[in-house]
Length: 225
Length: 301
Image (cartoon, rainbow over all chains, first blue to last red; front, top):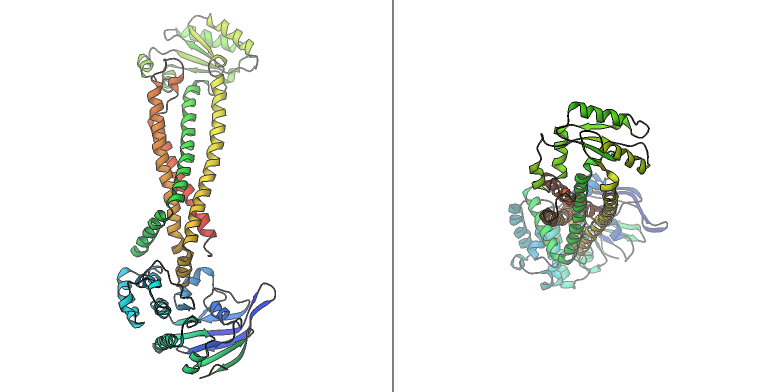
């Protein structure tokens, strides 16, 4: 589902973000990208969603070579990805329902599909009764649920989550992880960058550890060391 | 498809209201610029009416009485051709009655009283004379000589009548043209800035749109429509202005004494609608240009 082949990303002349990274992720896998800040976790995710382009090597996502993809194809790549961020990236002037609907609206889905799909995912993330609230009327955990609903509403093949629990307390994080777990159960591949020991150790899934841009560990059912 | 059109229109309208002040500035500037463009066209056309009989370096017109005999016309023709060192005989033109009548229709366009007195039978015919010399005294002495020929009704000299207006016309044309060009560029700049501001105000939305896979065109279209709409509204306003100016002028011309030439400075209504359509299209064009530049350069937010 995802394949990185000797991928390097260099900013400017000599700022190396990731270096010679290779690994494969199969369909339906749940992978933690771990490592300290600045180790290149976010860069890898950004390479997968083509927010950045690799300096060297190839990035394959859902059967497509992302590195060589023309810019005009990038929107269609993104439609097969769901992105979740530490800061949620919700639109504050839109309600919960509208935030999720927006993701379908801007890729041209008709109104009847929106009216059917949005309540369904809001129910899935446990926010069915808050669909008319605005983001700043919600707790952090609830906002992250909205952003997960928005990422999932188009049924992506892959979910890319960058520190989704970074702003949340342990109890709330547990809920978010349970949600990502259940999304993974539907067959969606999940790739999550984190430096949160607790969630990694509690889940015992594949762990890819980065240090200064280099993969130093790739372990099935790993823990955060 | 329908959902996309609905989305684009809704977003365009919302953004239009959100930036009302900037939008108004852009609309007003385009309207003024376009009004000036339209007025330039009208002034130009009005002067052309006045100058139509002097087109092509004609400096002297010998009017022939409408009841002159064929022999008298022939005599005038041969007299004119007898001065090949002063008169460019290749460019010497004789306008018969229908041709002279057609020309008079333009000259007296704003003077229906005079026009009604003219008929294709009673109108004087005319010789249009292009001199070879710059020496106006020489041309003037020739004119005095031609006035005495049988059948000649009058001899008119461009120097006496329209030299000043001709110079004035080209001066006015240059000035208004430069001013409208400058204002058009300013209008494009203002529309560009409005759209840029609108895009900046919605950078978070644009970021999310790109993230969930909206195409660049999908993101751009509402902004481009917004710019187009601003230009178009400017065009509509200036159309109204052009029309009002022209009506006021056409009505005002009737107050001038006939025969002063002022009454020629009127534009036929067919030409007026042409100018109005051109101004409208130009408005749409500057809106499209301004917003297209903004939308293509500021998408990376």
